[in-house]
Image (cartoon, rainbow, N blue to C red; front, side, top):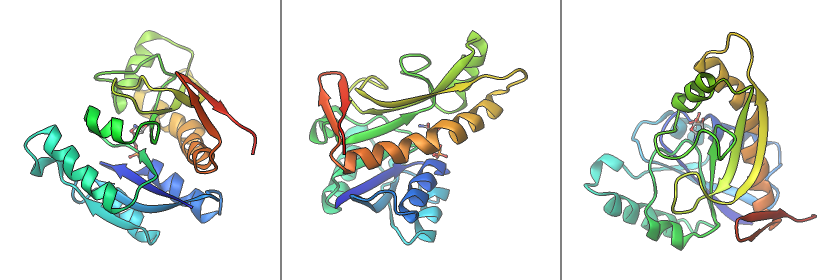
Length: 209
Ligand code: GRF
């Protein structure tokens, strides 16, 4: 059984998708050991509690620098014996030392088809605003391993979502979540826990069960 630790900062609908998948018995080789929030009072913590999963806070605002914050976060993750770290709406960029420590064991979900609409400044509704502004007809979501550069690590899964006439950033965000994010993230976690993701340079091979 792999210990999964989910890092959150906000509402946590992607965390909910993971908790629901676990509830349905779909995360066969892993279990969500804990949820760690960078924000006290984040609704994601309530979701964890409702599912009987331990919640912790490592408050970003209590630390002066990114280094001090990530050190505290690292200590928490070591204490929890994390095998897999899932960033589910986690707002902070992790330090290179953190990423090295957990190379190819940190998964992030991004609400666009990487390498489109990603990188510095592309988070939350901004991503969907930019996609609509550009006029693309397809967007989607990407689950990837985290590397030192934002949104640039090896891609695990992607799913396309159509843009519709009359879309607003809010409508599009919702559709991308429903049709892609909430499905892809539990699937990627399941594959990781079953040791079915083999990383070769930038390429992630998905092996047979
Ligand atoms: C999602 O759109 C995710 O792709 C992005 O942040 C958002 C988090 O939403 N990384 P939630 O907290 O999971 O509801």
